[in-house]
Length: 132
Image 1 (cartoon, rainbow, N blue to C red):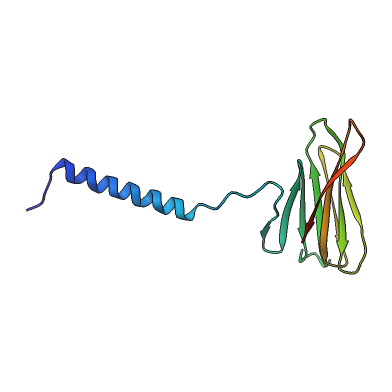
Image 2: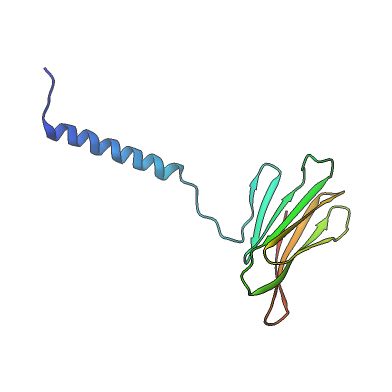
């Protein structure tokens, strides 16, 4: 004979809900700081202030590396740049203005970057530096 009491069904539903909640808590990824790099395959993503940078040391376009920079328009910054250090000891820079992006390919892997923003009010650059 099957037990059809409502209390038993409620307990089963509560146990199932708790199990799913625990599963969700286990699979949730931890929060990361805004300025911390994240990766997906060979591509690494960085940010400083509101400037976003992507670095790829295996872009598949025939170049050894590729970099992209974007700065949203907000009125506080008049330009942004990423200063690159390449494995062949060269130091290219990639600039953009708010609301626009810029990209370039390079003949050597990127090993370090500094993302910088220039304030409209002071004309000074502030930068964050990251290992790739």
